[in-house]
Length: 414
Image (cartoon, rainbow, N blue to C red; front, side, top):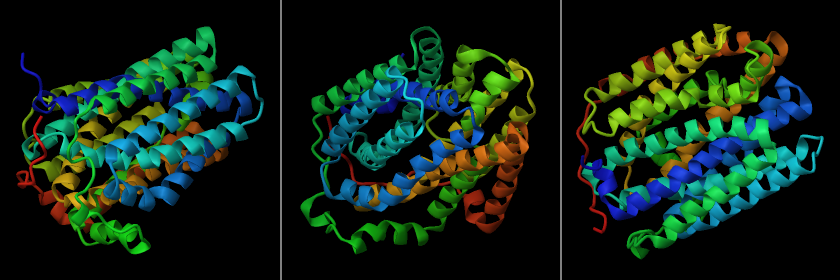
């Protein structure tokens, strides 16, 4: 059987394989952080604060990180950010090993990790079009989604086992080791277009940093896709409350918690695997709106769940729906953004698709602390459904969108 089109290109294949290992470690750590905080503080609000401390550096650094990605060698930026993320993971492990009984050092390292991630993501996504030709770009995002969802299954599932048997510090340290896979892949690449040509390289200034925001504001198709992402993840962020469901509602312990955390990725992986062999999704605008609508309904079902099976299936449905939406949104943004603005476009998008779930975790924690976790999840799912209907009404061009990939400058061949 032939490889998916994007994986036939050596440089992208190297990055994909490195991420296959690294993302598993990152997702293991994300699950471990929430469990760690709940063990220390026993508070829904404390879980929500994890989202707050992550979103501050994401918003604060987003415009700068996008400009950096458009101005300098994107591969070298990733090497620096991946090294920083590995060191943060080591720090988490030391906090857990020495049984520090306060949450603020965990919050501090979570914020620092988010800061490194704020530089890593624009560089990585802006680098992708340099690794595959334009006709394979949608497939690159499909198989890229597959590796992230695979990691989102393996990482949390392993996290539950590792935490239960060996302690939370080992989850952090295994993540630190996993970053070596991406670092090795980046060093092995032969990327001739990793940085923008000198003539297209923007000056490092406030005006240049804000150019991405001006571009997004003037591109209603891209803006509407970002708003759809933000509102959906803001209202339907149930992840922060999973320790409460695992411990107090479903009573399934750390291993059950690991599988609940991985459930969305199970549905997402099956969907991404299917999409990786689909050359083009028809009626993309209608599909993306319906997918996010289903995402909200599945969140409502999870909120009402009182058994592990129902909760797992509902979360799996959210992952499946989100993957379909994500592949289309990412493809639309990359195909409709000039190369010299891609890093800054991604940085603006980062505020929406990373800020949404992180602020959503804070909102979920506050509402859960006031009215209980089930009410928080159910009301969030309803809010997601209403937000989808509003976006579809305000930006009808998104519903009508169904465009073949435009011709873009070809990247260097392998």
